[in-house]
Amino acid sequence: FQTGGAGRYRLALVVLVAALSVTAKSSYALALLPALAVIAACQRLRRRPVNWPLLLAIGAPQIIVLIAQAALFQNTGGLIVAPLVVMNQWAAINPAANQYLLLKFGLSILFPAVVYVLYWRAAIDSVPLKLAWLTLLVGAAYMYGLAEAGERLGHANFTWSAQIALWVLFAASLAFFIQQNQTVRDWPRLLPGMLAFGLHLVSGLYWYSLHVNTAWMGDIITNFW
Image (cartoon, rainbow, N blue to C red; front, side, top):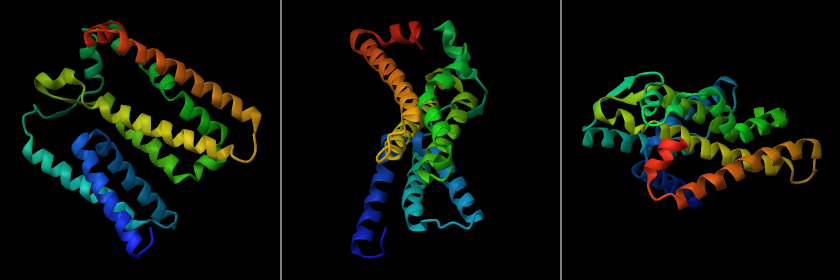
């Protein structure tokens, strides 16, 4: 971002989008903010530049909106640290909900993991990719380790942090994957990446078809989650 008028306009747009994103769904911001702080700290420790105006334009409005939401909406049972309690709660509805969690997580991140391994030299230096991965790890920690106390425990609201962060990681990984193959088609690495993405694509279409063809969401929760 430049310091001129166009740069200030873009920063204002970032502030607006950052604030609106939290009002739409705060789950991603809860995972993004700690990841941004870690990335900025690592950049400083490595004596690399940090775009402070952009960082503040993203972080400040999200923090302000999160504080406002916490003050206005206090009808929850509170936050508890309870590893896997949500998965165990959901197992009462679907016995498979708390089974093979490590395998499920590994399959969920197959494409981003394959891309990172295949192009690890470039991936190490990609700040957007590192930020996306770190945000997912924070979101996953929320998903598996935190819960809302009381009657909202089974709502599994902290799972949204991991799900949205995973979607962003997919987008970042796909953009990175395309960038790495813009000029040179490295088929020994291109084909595994395309295969991994194809598996996710087929699974996503199947999952979408379940939602389209199922009249009651409870059937999907009971039989597939």
